[in-house]
Image (cartoon, rainbow, N blue to C red; front, side, top):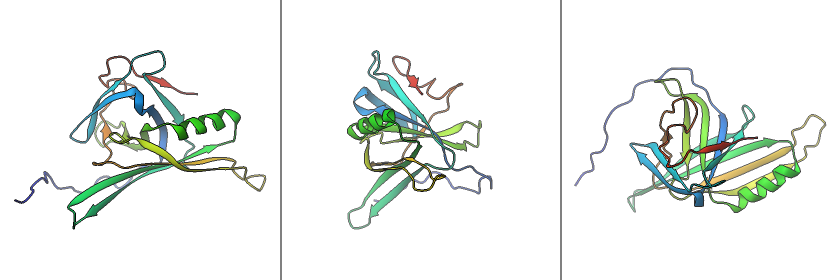
Length: 193
């Protein structure tokens, strides 16, 4: 039996698009009860409700430094395909507070929401990808560098990896701020600096 699952073609989109990441939101996997995905779109996030357990932690990214990639790996012999999302994050400046957070991020399985500079062609809202929806993301590489020359960057380079059965879905359109219309039993709190 042949699989016939293709539903449409694709033309050329606008010839000017934006790259890069604006914000990264970390959610602790153990505090996310479920994520509903329909037609490659996150429509619902259910989080454990409590004083600190229904929070996403927002990191603002230096422009032009961090990136997200997803690699598809298929096997004709085994008729399988899997997807490996990665996030390469740059944090400028070394601090004792960041040292502790990097340690905690390294010990925690997370779901990562990546808000791109790129916008959707309809509505103009930023695209927000959800990485690690099924199997979480893990901090698997990183370095801390002081720089050598006076004008060198000092800070962290951190790498998360995941392994998923489907491509990373996109968050549904929000009303005025990201996650404001995700139908969670309690409001999702965004914790930023």
